[in-house]
Each structure stands twice: as C-alpha cells, then as structure tokens.
Length: 495
Image 1 (cartoon, one colour):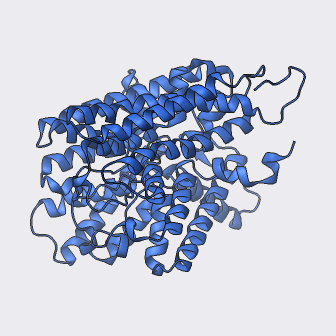
Image 2 (cartoon, rainbow, N blue to C red; image 1 turned 180 degrees about the vertical axis):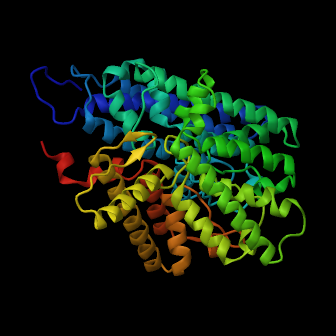
Image 3 (cartoon, rainbow, N blue to C red; image 1 turned 45 degrees about the vertical axis):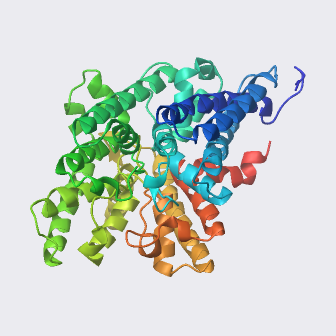
C-alpha cells in the first residue's frame, strides 16, 4: 500500500497497521512460552499453539512489511485508536488456542477468556481448570502478566522507534492514572524501567512460591497472575487448594505491591528510599483503607461465628481485602459466609481500586482523594463564597481541568455500571448478579456473586450476548473509560 507524499491523511492508517503488525509479532513470540510448555509436558495442545503462532506471526509480518507509508508520524488520534485496537486484536488472535485445544471453547467463551486475561480481570468460563493442559494454563496466566503492565508499554520498551511516533500518546492512553510521570528523558527508557521493576518482582515472587508448597509450574503461573493482579489460577480452588498460610502471606504481600504506583517502586529501587513512599498521599490513603477495612472484617467474621482459628481473623480477611482492592480476585476462603456486611465492603473496595499507575483496576484511590478534597472545598465555599481554595495532592496544586476530568470520570464510571447492570437484567440475570458482574468486570476484579459466585457456576452460565457485553466492559475498565469511549464521539472523527 502506497501513500503519496503530498496527500494529507486524517488518520495515518498505514502506519497504525504497521505498528499493529509489530505488536502481533511480539504476541507470536510470547506464544512460544506455552508452546514450549506443551513440548516439555508432551501435550497434544502443542499443535494448537503452533498453528496459532504461525497465523499470528504471518499476519504480523504481512502487516509490517507489506504496508508502506512515507508518513511515519502518529498523533493523539492514532495513539488512542491503536491502544484500543491492540487489546481487541490481541484477544482475537489470543483466543485461537482455546478454540483448537483438547478442551475447546466456543468463539464467545474463548474471546471472553482471552479478554479477561489481557485486561487482568480474572473472570473465567472454565469450571475445571485442572483438566486443562499445562500449555493452556500457562497461556491464561501469561496473558494476564502481559496485560498487567500493559501491551503498549512493553512495545514502547522494545521498539524505540515509537519514541518519535506517538509514543507519549500511547503511553498516556494505556497507563492507568490521572497524570503520568516520565521517569526518564525518553519514553522508551521509562517503559523499560517500569517493566524492569515488574519483571524483577515477578521473579522474586516465583522463587518464594517455589520454596513453598507450589511446584515450579504452579509457581510461575501464580507469579504471573499475582503480580499482574489478574487472579487466574491453575487450581479450581485457587490459593485455597494448598491450604497454606505461607502461600497466603506471600501472595498478599505481592498483591499489595502490585497495587502500588510502579513509579514509586521504581524510585525506591533506584535509591530514593521508603520516605518518598510514605510522603505520598495516595499510598498513605491505601494503607488507611486496608487497615480500617481489616478491622471491620474481623468484627463481621466474629459476629457471624466464622472465627475458628487465628488465621480466620488475621491472614484470611487481610488476603481477601488485598485481593479485592487490587482487583486480583484470587480466593482463599468462602468469603460469602462472612455475611452481607462484608460483601458490601468488598463492593466498596472494588470501586476504590488501589493506586493509579499500578496493575490494579477500579476507579483508583487517587481519584477518590481528588473527589473528597474537592467536595471539602465546595462545602467550605458554601459558607465562605469568596474563599479561594485548591485541591492539593502531594503538596502540589491540581489544576481545575484535572479536577473536572476526575469528577467526570467518576460520574461516567457509575453511569456505565448502571447501564451495564440494566442490560444484563434484560438478558434474564437476577438484578444483584447483573450489577455485581458488570461492576466486577469494569473494575477488572473478576469476582462473582450468586450464579457466578463462589458457590455458583461461574461466568460460563451467562448467555453469549452477556459475555460479549462484559468483554467490552472489561476493556473499557482496563483502559479507564476515556481511551475507549472517545472513539465513539463525533469530535474524534472530525477533521
């Protein structure tokens, strides 16, 4: 495909497709991991991964080298469009092994499972993951690890050419948070730094789990799904399978770290010390929320007669709090037996999420702080109308435009959950299950209740149309609303 030098292009589609081709080749490279896993365990699913790798690689090569353009620049529009497209395209190619494997899924279920993986939601249609091959389980967890820090961010780290071709737009469109800090002069260096911290923590977690009761394969898979705050497991009972306080403690610590802004973790790794962490308003709020909720959980567990051992009022509630607020969704106990008050608090934690710039989902604590401080200012101005007060975060004054954007985000967030819940009730789901499922997917938590909950049948029982709707909500939640919703506005497509 040729684009004349003199022709003005509204959206640089050829360049966008070429970059997408590079991304598909990267996905094909990662598919070699489950392929090798199948080879090691001598599983027939190796054929499914070989076919998928070949299709993905051939498509990527064709798009990268078969399309030529003289204009290599990409602006904001291309950045937003590419960021949204790559998650959908990755899911379409990533679902092929689920369709071709020895325990095949339908196209709908395969896409749902893949989107749930890449967006680190953790909702699954599999009723028995232990019957799956090692290769399929490895691919499930690997998709979460890739999506945790971000597909685009990984590409920025390995393809320096994007530094001068819309890299900053793609970085801002994918990385979670309100504002984004460049840790290094070039965006590719920032991406490498963040992925370096992410990879190092994943490796440490894998070793610690391997020292415990997990074998090497389970350690790798759970390191992927824990550090990415994704929640897929190789066992039907998730972490509860090992009935080990050691495993719960280790995963709780690393889920907590996964909920911290990785820019702060990067600075700590480069010698700034823990003081910068505790000076951060969001991190302190993160600690306070976890501590207060822990106290409330313990009271509820005791009141419901579920306190049988010391772990029941220490490790288990803390584990469930961290797995929920970080949107991980791993389970170690039947939390539904702790009473409706606990479920209400979990619902609140799903909304809060952890810190911006982390791998967690939810609205993020940063935005809650903006909202609370702005509300406090508005109440003060109700009494003192001439007073001038600003929203301060980390001793910095936030611009009114940033505050307005946060408030708009939170309003749209609630509207999307309400609209999604109503849509699912139209498909025949109970009203509580409908709203909880939508909220769970938008928040990228993956927990269910009722028919999709701990004692139910999981997301597999949902009608196909509901799974497609929830897949869209997973993507909207992972890319924090605006990156996806902006594509549906006339302003985005107008010259």
